[in-house]
Image (cartoon, rainbow, N blue to C red; front, side, top):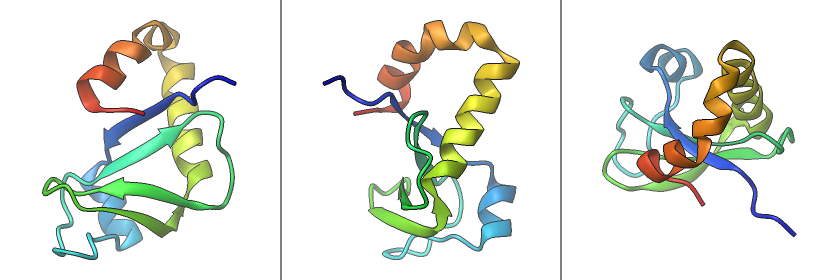
Length: 94
């Protein structure tokens, strides 16, 4: 069984504001990190983290949103797929 390709990436602040998302521990609304898994298109909550290191499952952001976002990025820039391992090392991953 292979490990899922999870990439942790900062969400644009406008997405956070539009969804009304904030860290439940400290209230931070900027530079929130979304864990994106290209293969998980479920409606389960996405895992997120704030810059202070608090982590939580965000019900307002289903995992499929992260998968779709990552798929769109890879469609627009297919060469990024070859850099996915490097990006995971730089920005975190599982």
